[in-house]
Amino acid sequence: MSAEHFKNEVSDFHSFSPDGLALSAFLLSFPPDKAELLNVARRSLLRGIGVRGAGPLSRLARVGLVHVRGARSPRGTCWDLSHLLFLASLTLVAWLFIATPSSCCCSSLSLSLSLSTSSPSPSMKQRNPTTKQTSPMPGHSGASEYTALGGESSPKLEKFQKVSIIPLVFLIFYEVSGGPFGVEDSVKAAGPLLALLGFLIFPLIWSIPEALITAEMGTMFPENGGYVVWVSSALGPYWGFQQGWMKWLSGVIDNALYPVLFLDYLKSAVPDLEGGFPRTVAVLVLTLALTYMNYRGLTIVGWVAILLGVISLLPFVVMGLVAIPDLKPSRWLMVDLDNVNWGLYLNTLFWNLNYWDSISTLTGEVDNPSKTLPRALFYALILVVLGYFFPLLIGTGAIPVERKLWSDGYFSDIAKILGGVWLRSWVQAASALSNTGMFMAEMSSDSFQLLGMAERGMLPEFFAKRSCYGTPLFGILFSASGVIMLSWLSFQEIVAAENFLYCFGMIMEFVAFVKLRVKHPTASRPYRIPVGTVGSILMCIPPTMLLLVVVALAPNKVMGLSLVAVMIGLVLEPCLRYAEKRRWFRFSISANLQDCGPAFHQCNDHP
Image 1 (cartoon, one colour):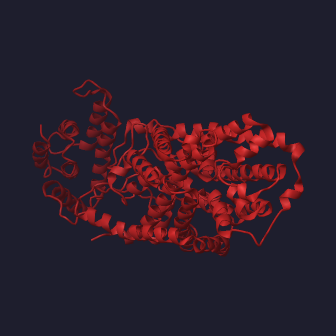
Image 2 (cartoon, helix red, strand yellow):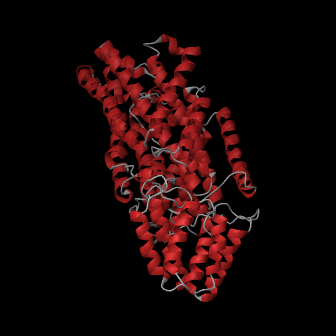
Image 3 (cartoon, helix red, strand yellow):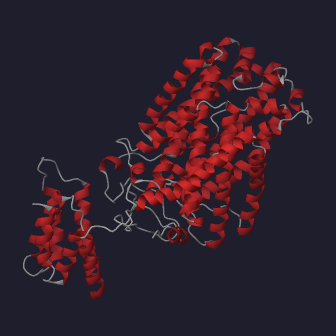
């Protein structure tokens, strides 16, 4: 029977009893496209209610379970979990209606009838059909299941594994570092001493505070979206969207760098990759191949990251052993303060030691994030610092330092000098694999960020759709398209552009962190940085000053393009809200998310 026919039939029940009234109200508001489920509910309702609703709820529950256990669909397959959830929700919601005072029940019935019989007005929010389940602001424990927008659980998505601590460590490693490939410009810009000191001191000023904030905020809001949710909870969804736009664009720019680095390390062995059509084809093929691997699943990416991490770091261990006879510690002390390119130096340090917060956009995919995320960040921090400092110590101490030679790919030349062609080939292969790992980790972060924003209603609903492997299909496609379009930029331009945008996003993160500490000091935080409110503010001052310095040192071209990108974000959010109001795109809020706090809801009430 049709859904409309069933609704007319059910409407005859609502005067029988409060139970019949409640069940009618619920069924009449059920989406009309679920005709098969409506017929199941109809049979259950008729058998359970009987005449004038005598004992309907217990009977309905029993009949519903019989349907789930024994009934089969017309295709001969057993009822899946969505049928069980539907029947369980039917009974639960009916009880909630009956437990409500009669006046509320009548108003609920009127609302249900109006929703089911009248067309929605233009001002009705498309996100309303999804009821948002909230927990006390701001945190609950982390392992949330995959749930499609609209509250329907997908059995295919529920079977995917969460990311454990070891794959998470290497995903963070590749989000931030991936090995020493790309640090050569620090020696070129400032010499050996400042390069070595930079990779020891800079983590204290920048990496540790950012990692600590990521640990606290990521466990406070254990969901995909990460820093977008943090800023939204403190400053409202408009600024949360700006955060998401700038960080996503920064991540896409960052990802455009890895095919460039990959080819820079291979061009000494394959000269045709220096430029022209072969290089363009190589960038395109590499991007598509790595994008497909991201499409196949985050768990695969995590375990592949472990393998790539070991292979990428191993040749530098061998290089260190080979270089021991040639080490001269006096070379480490070389410095010329009158010949320092501070802009290149700081940009190189900043680029190689940031993005600790990127893993927060995958928190919803992590197993037990309240414990796993802080530990993984700690282990990754040690791995990243050693992965930079040790190769620099070898490269600057084992051969005479000529600063002008220290540019992208120079570690492969050092390997040839120390060990021969075989070691150079190994370092080049390690670089290629390292850039592969960094690309996959960044792509995962960017795409799941878009999924998290869509689940919060900030982006159209199609961004929240997952592939059969549980990965955000449209997020991956959009991120890959951005990488291809930006791959024409040079290494220095990419680094400067992404750093500029990243700085704006990090300032908002610091503001959100401090504001939530001040406004919600007693909120649930599974991991809390062991400092008070004053300590939180003091901890954010040095990295904030560093951000301002990096922004001030940006080239005029990069600054202009970045400001244009920021302005696009300021206009894009109102355009999306207008598209939502005009129903050009569907927007929904996932029912599986926790409460973002009053700032989000007050700013998210659109007329």
